[in-house]
Amino acid sequence: MFIWVFHRVTGLLMILFLGLKFLTSFFLMTRDKKPDWALALHTSPVIDVVLIICVVYHALYGLRTVIMDMGFKKEKLLFWLFTALATALTVAMLVIYFTRDY
Image (tube, rainbow, N blue to C red; front, side, top):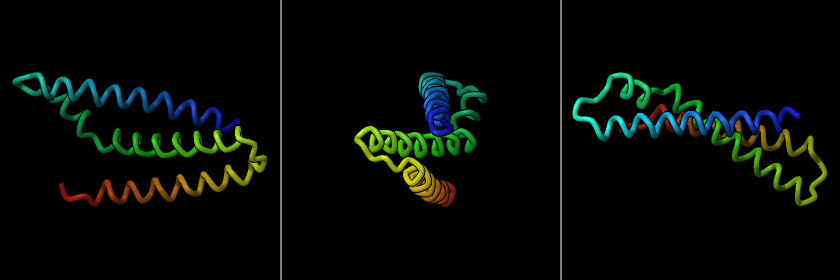
């Protein structure tokens, strides 16, 4: 039940934050004077971190659901395997995000 709710919540958060990113991009690319609120939201590391976490967990838990739908019965093993994989992948992506040089 936890994964079902978490998968839905991460999907909604991705829609919300990606929509916010697109909206702020629009304001930053079409205006002569860039709004401060759009610049602050678009360059916010908090939004980027939440997006990274949501995308990784949503993708891997979705893959877990597909594997279970194909007939794999060990649900608890898949939960721990995909949670560990998602955590490792998230940490690696966050390290790359915070140590980039551009």
